[in-house]
Image 1: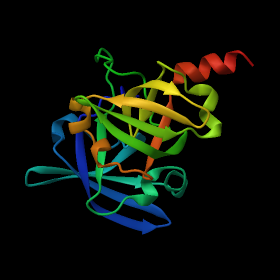
Image 2: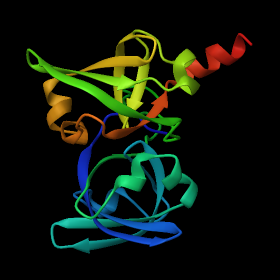
Image 3: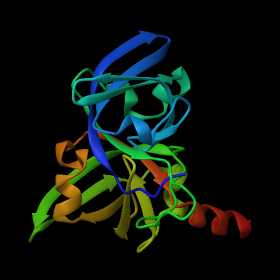
Image 4: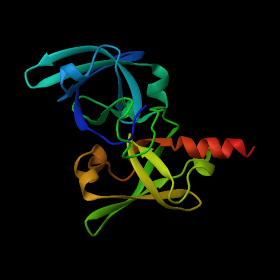
Length: 197
């Protein structure tokens, strides 16, 4: 489980496609804070550390990524050099600054519009039908693993506001109109909606 507060942006230095994928990411995590089998949120996807190797100032983390994960996330667009949001899993007692993020991507969404508003940024994303009932104004949502608050929704869009700090410390500043992002809805919204059925 994660909080949606990105700790760093890593860079992909190897992708091996063998049906399933083998992904290696350069990070500045400390080796003592991770182990083989640790869970790391990568662009909103919970992946398990397969191998670790110290390479000068970088700690290289490698992950197996299933064909299923590739097909239902924006991982299919990743390439060597792509930047990816990273967060280590929570420990009991950690501060929850965002919201509970499970690392299970519900769907992908397309950036439709972007504008700067003062010192922050307003982004409009497409609202897929399968999550429409779960995305509400002032509710939480994870975009590429980043915990954000929904400003408003329309028939086929939702809007978020990204403050300057988050903009500069995640890969959302690299997203351009028509790019695809990973979306995970707030688990509380899912439970409440399901309880009404």
